[in-house]
Length: 107
Image 1 (tube, rainbow, N blue to C red):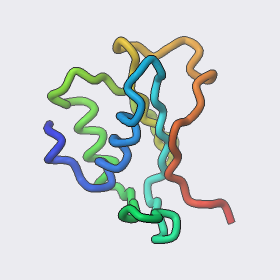
Image 2 (image 1 turned 120 degrees about the horizontal axis):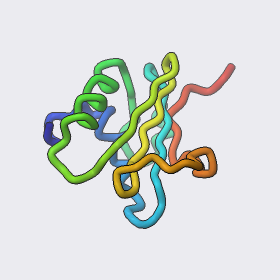
Image 3 (image 1 turned 135 degrees about the vertical axis):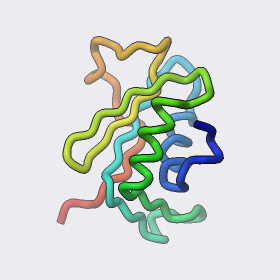
């Protein structure tokens, strides 16, 4: 699957995993159903992550045409996507902070 085939919400999530391409493992956490307000988006376009974006991400992480390896885990509507370092999940994953979150605020 190529980048151009991704939904907009899926692209927004994956772009965050690519922001720092160095020795750090990237973890992006998002909630299916997330809607970002215009104020939260600032200068950029508001991000919306729906079920079809999750499906698009799942397909991309399994079939991507690039050398990157990802791991996705879903618990109810909260999903973590991890850009793996050297293709492996580290033993001490809990020591790595979440780089970016797209989650609805608790009310």
